[in-house]
Length: 282
Image (cartoon, rainbow, N blue to C red; front, side, top):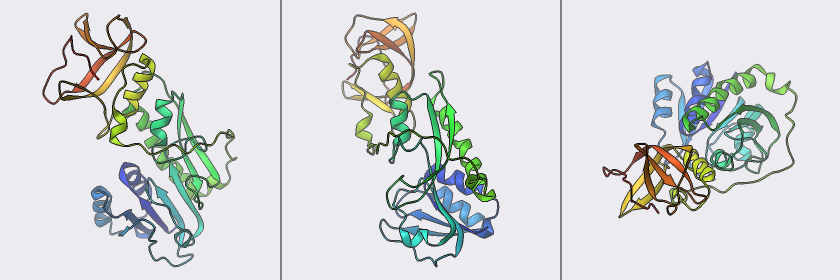
């Protein structure tokens, strides 16, 4: 079963590891991105690996592969490339479609307090994230789960969906029942990571958790120092202090939110400067 894989980042690496026969593979990575792990795996497994510029398709012969699989690839897969797949050209999208389309849709889902996350396999079409949905691997989540735990659930979906594809099972499964809401969420930048302590505590908690990974940790400033909040927990503590105020209760650090409720700060990075009561983060 021959496949050409358009890969990028950790999800792309997982997809590559999920294919059992390296001799049947070829890999495409985006030019200029750091995909050293994927490239090293290709060298170790003697897999052909080529770079691809935006809007410049790689030269492929029609029908030369059984499958084309895209996993976290940032550029549009063009029709000339899809035609290389004899059976199907599919994408692994790290969110539930069609409600969460776009590059950072999984982050938006967590910010929006969704109770379920998922990995969607869909056919690649001319429009981003708009092709026929073949299967959605869905996971329930709760407030006690860290972003790393949530990501671990999604990571397990990647080999499962690849196996569904290679076995042909994905084409036999009932098509998922999906809602009518279809939203294309905008891409986020590092500048979107600044915390607004004036919003309610729950919204602040969801925001911090959704961004709790390199290099996009949610952050605030005090006296020119940036404090990256790596983990915060909802608490029953309240305070009449200003939003953003750092307070100490029972020898624990909290920050006051816009509704008077406090988030306990359990992990942060202050560029070597400790967070202390009396600060007002902004």
